[in-house]
Length: 345
Image (cartoon, rainbow, N blue to C red; front, side, top):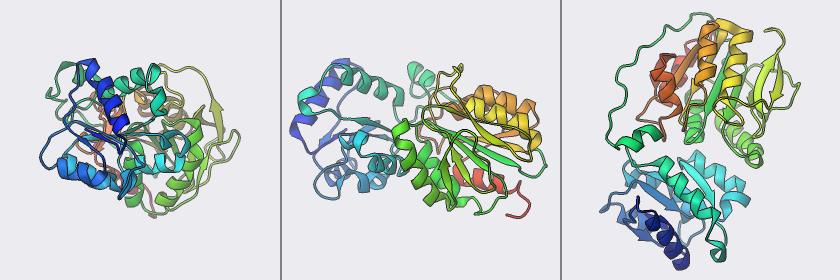
């Protein structure tokens, strides 16, 4: 479904998508209200949503569209997705799976079309959970009842969180249920462009109810303070467990991600051992699995978001299938498992 108040934009997007042959436009709408009404009678896998429209607009309507869409993913395609970082991060926090800046209607061609189609293929059908599954069949069964590792009983000394597509919404829910005081520093690696990181940190600080800072090389860790990887460097730590400091690196990693969850998890295990706990939220690809292996080898533990609550069950799935997870749960229950590790939450 394409939801955009511009007749030209709807027509051009329709031509681009239908030219691929792998997609069908099931419906179009000029307002969010019209889209919600249409979704009562049509099933779609992806909703392309503009943010600037008459009426309630796209941003405020995301929760209602997600409810009406019955499992479809929402992808923001809007001119504000690049310049309006506040709105973009807010859209992701409300549950949008991905965002793509929309060029001026006179420049709807070339590279934009390629990127749009690649993003649509990556999101895939409603109910499919990762790229390999989508290439086979949207109904391919996922791994059932993976083996779970035992959770260490040692008090929590460091919490490291990794996320990508759909992760901002999951992080917001997670922090809503996490006690305001856990007595340990919190590291976050979320795949986002560098320009969005300051806005993301500000919004995450509000939802988390604690300070949230974009990482600076050499800064100290503090209990109950969130430190976020910048968009152009991996977040790692070094020094002793008593006084760890942030180290930012830009070394290439197997996942190809920048920033990557892998170096963060590996460093957490290296410094804190059984006192380190990693959590992998919704996201495409395999980022985090190498770091999870290093973390559990060091005595730490890793939790993963479950399939049903993930926008894209790619990163959490490889953790589960690799046998690295101590639990596979939705974000609210993951928060409760984390809370069980802190002595005076």
